[in-house]
Amino acid sequence: MTFSYDTFTTRNIGFVTPEEQATLRDAQVFVCGTGGMGGACVFALARMGVGRLILADIDEFETSNLNRQAFAFRDTIGQHKAEATRDLCLQINPDMEITVYRDDWPAHVQGATTASAIVVNGTDDLGASLLLYRTARTENRAVIDAYASPLPSVYVTQPGDPMPEERMRYPTGDTAWDALTQDQRDQAFFHEATHVILHSSSRHYIDLDLAGEVAAGKRSRMSFAPMVISTGMLMAYEVANGILGRTPGADYRGWFFNPHAARVEHPRGAITEALLRPIVTRFLRRMMA
Image (cartoon, rainbow, N blue to C red; front, side, top):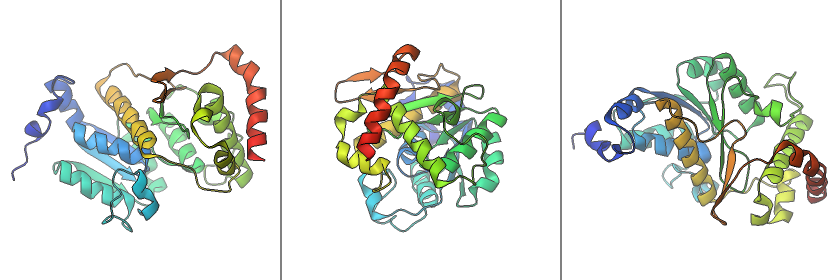
């Protein structure tokens, strides 16, 4: 079958103009982490007709990824995530240009960031996230990200905005991304969990005993397909906004989507946050204990 990009994207028109579709075709996006949320975002980017991607990952697909990761199939188990994702994207749009990096991606992060319109953080590693954000700031690029949350979420950090390590008070400001201690990692996760509980109703939709084990590092992070894939879709919308010069739907603090109650949950005001923070901190410490 002869592939036609115009035919492939014809049903996009109306959501975007033909001129905007051409802009998507010419754009390049750097996605670091192509498993859960990052993979779902890539899935949407490929189908919306983004023409060029830089994909980075250090892992291979495994059986436990099948419950949520867009490019995890029985025949991709054991394959490198970014390479398998590239191959499947080319089944969608064979005209795509896709560069893949494996565990060598930190050596290419500056070039990949500079060459791309947008950076998407799909990693679940603190050090990798710090490297992405710090590089994006120096290269004047926005980063699209989501919280480690039981509810779908999205936030967009522009180069002049406070980075997550700054606004969520990570103890990492003077530490190189690849020199973090386990204590710094644990504290950063605690601060992110505090933010999630403080600014959303996430605690009502998970098993808190199991969540406490996750926060204490006793078990792997819980993930659920509707939450992960919905988050990736929210990220893809923000990629489109950034490429097309549209006003982003989220800012650097972001928001949470609550599908259980059909509502959007925005961050609380500064006064309410200050009053509730000690309560949430005590709650989290009890849960982890």
